[in-house]
Amino acid sequence: QVQVVESGGGLVQPGGSLRLSCAASGRIFGIYAMGWYRRAPGKERELVASIYQNGMTNYADSVKGRFTISRDNQKIAVYLEMNSLQPEDTAVYYCKLGRPYDIWGQGTQVTVSS
Image (cartoon, rainbow, N blue to C red; front, side, top):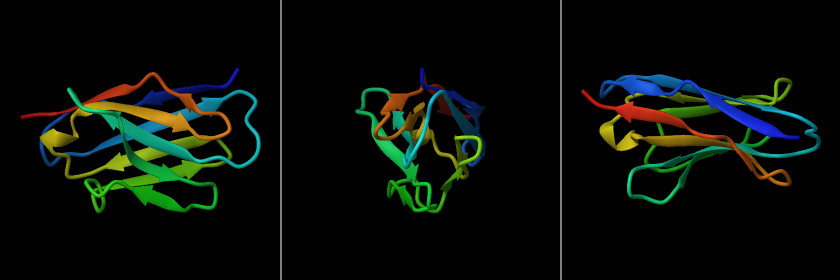
């Protein structure tokens, strides 16, 4: 059974930083993307950043220049370094193991508040 588990959320002041981690386990083969999504209160879930095995990345405009996604193919892990956090970044952050698996993690809360 393929599973995805996130960690690293928490409470941070505006302008602060957090690092999210996500590890996948189970029978995982082939080529797949991994990504981070978020759902803010009262809003739809949105893509934050994604990364392919060749290192190609994609970012939401709202996080470009502040967030950095990276992955470790050996560990089947993906990370999200978040800098210059703002209150509008407050959300539940989800990790996703992409096609053909399409497996979501349970989510981790990130709260940016003074």
